[in-house]
Image (cartoon, rainbow, N blue to C red):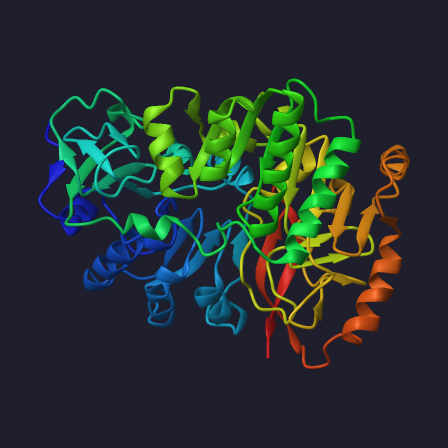
Length: 468
């Protein structure tokens, strides 16, 4: 059987790609990905129209997608995260029908249960053999884990592996195996691995961020969860990384060894593994090249699928075994609902990713955020979009104090006993208004829905309105 195709267009033709179909992509190359743009360019040349793109995430490097929407090649979009370059166009109404937003856990769940059908999946694979056994750990475009691509490969009608590092059969350390693969195509480059690193994956020097991180680490300690067997996930934002650093200091000082670290993995998590803070890392996505090296070389650094990470319909998940998660927010309201889809003006700048999943599953969910950014209040009366429900959020940590969800009175008492500055979230809201003034009067939203945000039950949890 010959799976190797001479070029991408041939692979697309052999896969039977036609107008009106759904095609899928994963985002492990993040802002360095070339494959989504290559496929859509070839689709346009083939005269295809009315395609739906189901991408685990869309980054600024995918800005050409906007032109394909304008010319009718793409008329549907589904994603877990959409960054600002494409998000602005969506918010301004470029797409005729609403984007479907899922979480990182709900996407594989919907694919594997048949709610979300994929006709042709395109898997960007840094290394593949001629039969499609492939891995993200090796090659010039190595990106580490391929966790988000597994459901696509398992369930799509046709699977095309796109690689820039073709090796002899068999590739002995494969993530996705040949039994799921229909066609393989070799291209010059699938992406720039330097684009894996986002601008947020840097340890902050800002004293406000460091103060927030210190408070958060102390709150985690006061919760009683920071003990032998501790499991932990943190986001890739600066304040979240600083929390990890403070937690690391406590763990090393007290000789605490945790069970596992989870999620999108940075070099800071790798440092904690190598320092003995954790027995293992469960990795659905590498956020930097240090993590890529670690997953390639360290057997304690495990690759997991997005379904194993957080699917709500899986028999069990890593997220369901999670003690503490530290996350960010663009807005949080006085009912503890969190927005990570839009900015304060209503423009799409992100998405849930794993935020909703781990917030619901973890024993302690900590939101770290300054009280305001660029004179815009983070604590608001009502968020523009409910990304994560308030019932899943336990703490908001700001530079002015820590708000505890009223549903966790025992946690509030524990923090007070530790002499931490516990505040009522409504008092933080008042302080935010005093500092920044009332809500921005320049926000103008229409009644047109440009995004449907699905909850973990795969039903619409909230909607995003177009910006005038």
